Picture 1 (cartoon, rainbow, N blue to C red):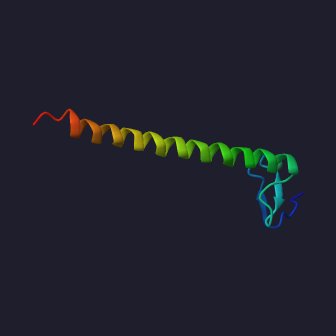
Picture 2 (cartoon, helix red, strand yellow):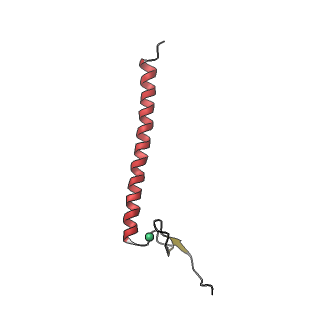
Length: 68
Ligand SMILES: [Zn+2]
């Protein structure tokens, strides 16, 4: 027996089938999703910060330790 499944999406956290207008199935998954987004944002900031840090180091070394 084949049950017809209309258009549906999957919860971004647990993968449960949900209506296509939704992205998450429950408040619990919403909380997890928000936490994940926050974590990702922080990771992005850390990445940018480390790139800036390396650039600053390169600039500093080319200004002071350049020799010539
Ligand atoms: Zn879920």
